[in-house]
Amino acid sequence: MSAESAAPVEQRLAPLLNYLFLFLMLLVIAAILTAAMTLQYGYGELPCPLCLLQRVALFGVCFGIMQQFRHGFSYRNSGLSMLFAIFLLIVSVRQTLLDIYPRPGHEYIGSAVFGLHMPVWSILIALALLIAFAVKFSILGGGEKLAAVRAQAFPLLDRLATVLCVYVIALCMVNFVSVVLQCGLGECHTFGYALLPK
Amino acid sequence: MMAAVFATMTLALIVGWFSRPRVAIGLAVLCLLLAIKLFLFEIYSPETGFRMPWIQTEFVVAPRRGA
Figure: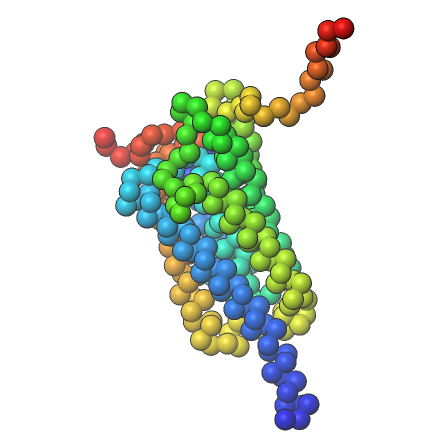
């Protein structure tokens, strides 16, 4: 194979790995959000205010990733995702510190998943997201090399990402309706759905 | 307030999907600011805020040991 014919493949490899990496991150976050909503609607575990803020943070990370699928790689969108990941870390550490000392009314909210409660999982998820971004930048770099090739250059991956992005938007819309029903216009210190008849 | 946080995030995702990146990023930043405000309210509210008295975060002068 000559150097000329190999060049486009090399130029496409880094963007392909970048979009594949982002797709996997989005898939994992969508699975986590789906699990949280299954616990809420299937098992009646009402989310607390800090739990809802953690969900928003996860949607924020998704936002930065989805923007890259729509408009190509950019540091701005990666930075936005990382800001939301840091916010997730701060909120989940705060909640874990609140509940780490057992006392009446301050037990961990919800049931344990694989032995860990959701705020503790959130810490691990936030750390994993930040590490994932760091590893991605370390290996693939950034800048024009990644921005030059859009996700549309990889049709299968683009189609799968489109389906996943629409699913995440639908999840966020369901969460919005659920939050309105649960919290009304307040800060959400409720023990049931405030707007639903009891 | 929580509804406003989720409303801005939902709008950001939808607007971003329909190719309005600058507006979408503005909405996402607004969502983050609202979420931070709500988080700080949770911490500092005298009625609903939670203290963590078992974690000492401020300097306390240690009592002097008896001679």
